[in-house]
Image 1 (tube, helix red, strand yellow):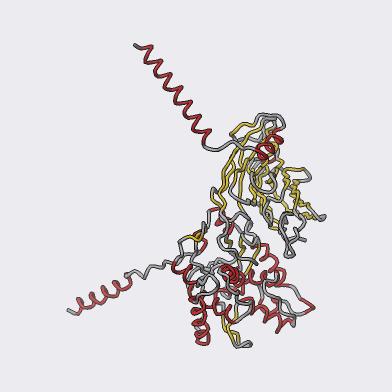
Image 2 (cartoon, each protein chain N blue to C red):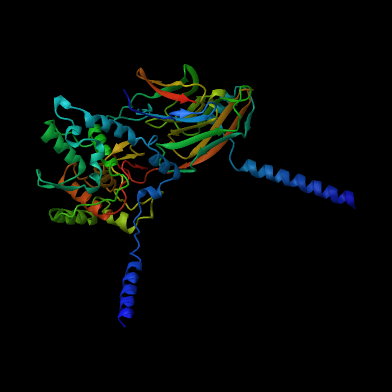
Length: 106
Length: 153
Length: 254
């Protein structure tokens, strides 16, 4: 389980646009870098990020080796109903991680 | 007398407009080669219009390994008029793609940020595809200095 | 007459209080970074170093092989407030100065009966970052301990010594030429205010020792060994050189 840092407000007013940020520990090995033995290390990156709000996709990102290690993403979403935001990262070597955060909408 | 001064004024205005356009075009070079091809592929036949997109990145970066970048688009994000996709391409990394973001009216604000890698000083292009199919762009030149000390690990 | 002399004394005292202290020209490397890197350090939700702090919080409560957790003796991490600001410090058991990493390892061996972590081990760095964070915002406060004096003096001598094929001393770049440029890079004063820190060049968290070794390799010198006396002596000198500056741990640097 990779460490993650996720930030979003705990509560929001209905219709308010909130900022969400998500950072995950991952080397984002580019596939161009030689290792200690001189051979190029195989690519190992997070390839996709998706944020689902009460099951509905509200933001997705397709990442490439040009994204820095420990990838950071910040985006916005409209607070509609109270519920759960689900964050999913998938990538090379079968990498998959899901985190959930509650959002209270008043 | 009145009509000739009016004509002079019109000519001066036209001249100023042309000069301004020329100056703006000279501010950055048009993307060429693979970068232009990547942009064209994303646009899928649509004209790529400069404007509405702002690619925010430090013109001089501290370290090319981790470069904060933000893309904002001028759009009200309504159901009928919103940004559906944002893409960023680079000029001189091993690959042109940097990232693609899928948005929609639920995004609220077309404002995304991430941190990227830049191998060297180069040009970056950010593109936004709108719900009406139009494609808008912003182009930025970034200077990347390499660390002076070869440190090894 | 009595009232007048009282006034004079009062004026003298006030005058002394009003005399400006010598200008502190020391600058943290933070001031020399671009705005977006500064923002990265300031934002706890965006500072990659906080990933290690998170790990540290878990390790603080972990009970390896059923040994006592750090929390069992020390309570909450907040109890470590001010500790990192006083390191390097004298260690009674080893009878020499130690940096925070060595101290954490010593605790691990003595009280948890676990083997010491090797230098730059991710879990050691995580605990160093957690403990260091508890001193964030506090002034660097090297202890006033006479036993440290000869070591601090040795550290200063090492700082001034020309080393490597390039025959450069720390002092030549970081005292004499700070603010100047090496290639296109700005030369910082090199105050160790934020270690362990997330270095963009490493794309990882690392200790002051790692940074010192990098610099030495940079001037083509044999780098001091992790855990060596010279390393802690240099760190001791750097702490006194940065005395009073604010702890920024866990910082971000280019």
